[in-house]
Amino acid sequence: AQSVTQLDSHVSVSEGTPVLLRCNYSSSYSPSLFWYVQHPNKGLQLLLKYTSAATLVKGINGFEAEFKKSETSFHLTKPSAHMSDAAEYFCVVRRDTGNQFYFGTGTSLTVIP
Amino acid sequence: DTEVTQTPKHLVMGMTNKKSLKCEQHMGHRAMYWYKQKAKKPPELMFVYSYEKLSINESVPSRFSPECPNSSLLNLHLHALQPEDSALYLCASSQDRGGAQPQHFGDGTRLSIL
Image (cartoon, rainbow over all chains, first blue to last red):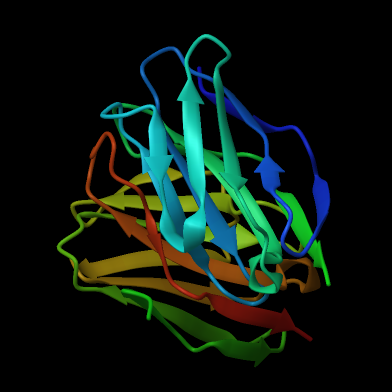
């Protein structure tokens, strides 16, 4: 069975400070993992994806995530937060067969000027 | 710019109306999805189409009727909706059974039921 846990429902950081959004997964198989961002009244935009080629994945807008199999984690980080990063973030796991995607409950990121 | 296009962006309808939401993609994806999203919640899966055939229906009420006329188009027909159906409706597409491939989302239709 697959499931995703986002450990923080809300994270608040100051502009220019690092961002850490935490995600843990459970999967019976080698998972495909994704991070999406959603700005108000918009769809979900793909930030990055883990596909087993490399454990450190770089995405758009300066975000990156590290896949740690031993910890079943896929945390999202960014060295320096920007005001435009304020949004909802979703961690998603895809079952390796079929068309099922499993969403975390989301983390709302606030960036304080 | 999103590669999945949804129309209309906003829709207000009464409980007795009939309307349709439309979704289009030209990425050659053969899996297409409808999601319902309430504020501050993750998307909830409604339907999945695989090669234009309905493969997953998450026990959605019959007042929602999906249709996939061809590999690029996905419709959601609405009839006799309830106020609790007000939400953001998202369409997505992906490679079918694509393992490591992600979904691509449209910007959604904001639906309000009067």
